[in-house]
Amino acid sequence: MAKKLFIPGPVDVSPDVAAKMSEPMIGHRSAEYSQLHGETIGNLKKILFTENEVFIGATSSTGFMEAAVRNCVKDKALHVINGAFSDKWAKISVACGKKIERADIAWGRAVRLEEIEDQLSSGEFDTLFVTHNETSTAAMTPLEGFSKICVENNVTFCVDAVSSVAGVPLKVDELGIDVLVTGTQKCFAVAPGLAVTSVSPRALEMSEEMSGKGIYFDYKVYEKSSKKNNTPMTPPIPQINALNYQIDKILTHEGLENRFARHRELADYTRSWAKKNFELFTEDWCSSDTVSCIKNSINADLTDISEKLSDRGYLFSNGYGKLKGEAFRIAHMGDRTLEELKEYIDVLNELMGL
Image (spheres, rainbow, N blue to C red):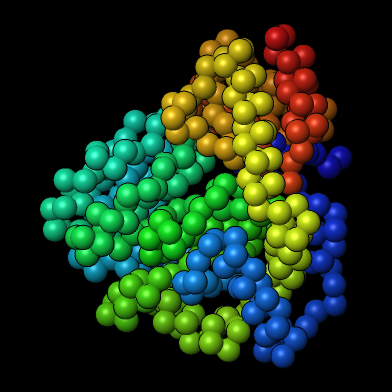
């Protein structure tokens, strides 16, 4: 039985979007694909509010996280760590042989600019890595002001927005983000297997100077193909076709502002329910509009709840990593409706005896 996915990715894909992946195949070096690619990039730039280069690739978002490391870290990077996925980015840097320093923030909250301003101003770092929406804890970091300090200190500003783009407004150029990484299987509500990254002229300059980048994630290789409305390696054409169709739906049918408002409505409903019956794991000022992390303050058997939800046709999200059993997450992203969310929470109320 197909289940409704209330996990923070992959999310449910609407039937009409899924159907775009079964259309007849086209050649990846054909004029037809070039047109599809160009349309998709143009639409992505509208979603990202950017004039920077935008690249798409056959990888999970982790691949483009590694690309940011390989193209932008020359001497030393500062990684803000406030959950499992920001920690993962730091581990990627170490695995790539880069020197790093950690700015550890308590799980359940976001970093405030003043907490790392002295580090950024030290002159030690050429790159800053921040996770905009820490999916493991549902903490969303306000990014205003970061780029100013980065520019003043010649630091490249890299952002993981895997679980926030297309769910909340994230204006790349206005925020001065040099590299943004996201994926299709969360707020875009498209199948996994495709990642997106925006890359500023500054980041491209950094890439030009960098050695040891490999080939698969070299920004300069992507830039060369981008001029021909193509990708350097074989693109996942079915996912790109679905993504372009979905973005067109977002822009011309729902509308970006309406989509953002719907995500806020879903988040507000979830947070209100959570505060009534539990406690939010995330501090109020930085709670995400795409996923909520809720303390298991009633000591429910979350494994049992997960099994019972599965029998009822839902996929449940336990706490991630060290939070398993101590918290659980409710994703309210993608094409999810308020009616669907209410039905899910009604079932949770029944199973948890609320």
